[in-house]
Length: 162
Image (cartoon, rainbow, N blue to C red; front, side, top):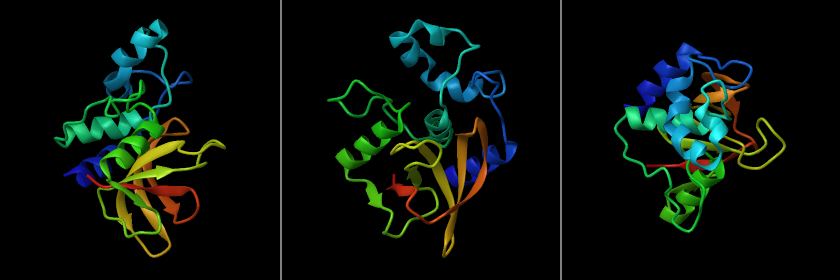
């Protein structure tokens, strides 16, 4: 179910405004607005967005029926609005799969240095696996959602299998 929902949502190719906000992507942003605004009141303003790849994945997982604690790492103050939290949670729960291991459609894929020059900078949902590349559904790739072809290279940190 997650794969079909992620494919359908990615095909909509929704895009944020110049502030990474706006009515077209508010359904994604809203999943973390309350948590973010508790730390910084500016996020109560619907004209202000944030990097939303994690929100896109969280939104789709909720749509598919997954019940996720948005603060899954109890020893941390961070929530699933940060890719690093997804990674730390997957390590804690022993559900992280190294990029050298076989992946499956429906796995979450974590990226290093895909958009910015930093580790764990992006997350998406794996739709298809091919010999040299994967097909993903992602949000906030340059402020757009979509279906993407990604090479199996060093940008793929690994996978989360639920």
